[in-house]
View 1: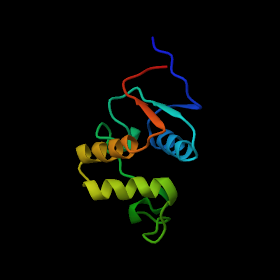
View 2: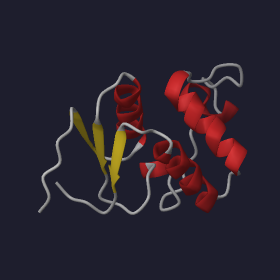
View 3: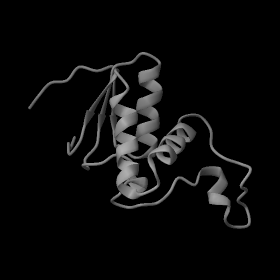
View 4: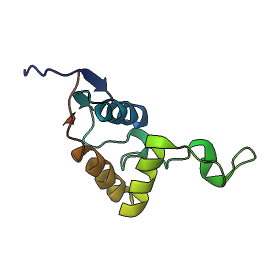
Length: 113
């Protein structure tokens, strides 16, 4: 076992956990992001492969609009993924890149709490 001291520990590396960890780290908190999988993203990772739909829903369906979209950290993640490429392995690389650039986040893959 290893004892880690943080201001905030986020359990789960899906979209909610990633957004919470990034927001807290950018406000100066020392954050541990703990994920029980080898890749970040939850449903958008290479393991599942669902895209980021958000409010726009990809422009599909009756209630979706190509003119509406989530903003903030979700949009940053979506844009980073689009710059890396939409293939599933590139999604994983894009997410890892986002978190490796954040100095206030310690990332723990394949870790259970």
